[in-house]
Image 1 (tube, one colour):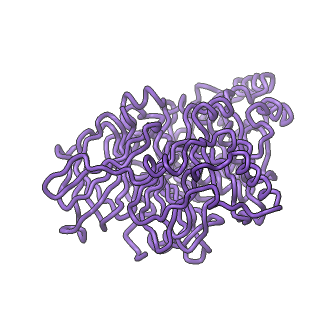
Image 2 (cartoon, rainbow, N blue to C red):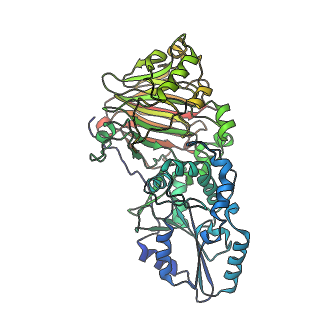
Image 3 (tube, rainbow, N blue to C red):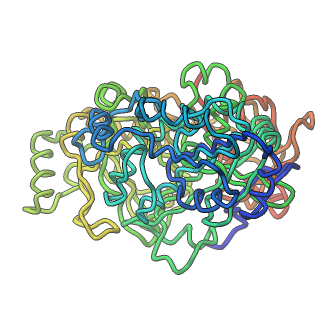
Length: 577
């Protein structure tokens, strides 16, 4: 676990205009002020610190400042309106079909519009959905927020939801409202504003705002859509977390562990622009909303819309514990019960493994389903300890093994493994069946979903099936001078195709109409280049995940720096077309 050059804050370098600090931000915006009527709209994503914005925008002395929270329906009405999507389940809801306009009280909205019409001077409208209050402002500013930061604000009880103040709820319930309701509504609303926004505001760091204009924003989006890029990884502790990422990725040694790294989850990660030496952070989903066809590919976009369908993340159990024993729903189940179009099929690629590493996968031959479910429920009630190895296969695992996990397959990583999890994107739908009698990080038992799990377990995924179809189903498909390409999965039920390349020389890759997501699984560093110089050369270090937009077409990967003359390896995922 020697430290590497893993880059924790990757960025896209561009030239443009950036203002940093509230004084400079306000000075830039005041240049737009006329002596007569001037209307500023500051629209916001959920999680934005509205009091901070109000504090500083008040300094420009508007004659009228309207907060959208004053124009929305009463909290009781919002709670009733969103109840069908929040449901009674502690974790799972149903994907919302509400829109931002549904949150506003029509009478209050009409009064605000009338007041704006009758007022001269500087007018500011601030808050969630502010652009709906006055649709032709002199200045439209959008305060964006990445989901990973919103999640931190949930934990600190700092984030106010759409239409209600739910800061006193548990972070998991706040996340549930965001996932099933608020974020979908905010993304749909923001998607209608991209061509109208004059300035983008980054307030991820409290009291350190950064402002870029429309041209700078679009320049970064355009560059990312035609070049290799990385999103900003997000590391998080877990009850089972380990020590590998702390060492290898150069993380804070004061933390007890790190269990997760969301290394490519564009719905939750950030995308950073480096504007003449200063970082500007935004949700990486902006790129997909604006450039879905260029990034995903035309056929992939036709199937998934403006959603990024491939997810890469790390699960670290080295010097940690087992993950929970779990199962993911089938496509039919996730669609019927949660309104999601596809399920979380996945695989475990062993980026590293220590002595004793293992993966639990599939059921033993000849088990009795009713007996197993009975024993799981008895264990959940504390009457017994669930005998996992009586029912579930436990496979020894070594570095570069690949275990395939289509929906409905019972599984979990054992200790001493660094798993690169390659999966489809729906990331909430893990039905935990057994959690080894441990508490969550909050000191409370984590939610167990035996009833959901029992409805989706594929009882035919037994030892015979798993050994033949799900463990190291690897074959060589092509090789040449200094390189070899292997097919490593995924399962025929899954829409993701994975290929592994071993190489000592430059290898040519083709996107073939689909976004490519890769990780450098072996070697210190490689260089990504365009045969036609269509993009700048891009350096990737060990364990870094990177994205190649479908629009790139042809690209090459070669050992670089300390890796020259040595064997390197990548694992690549794409959508089967």
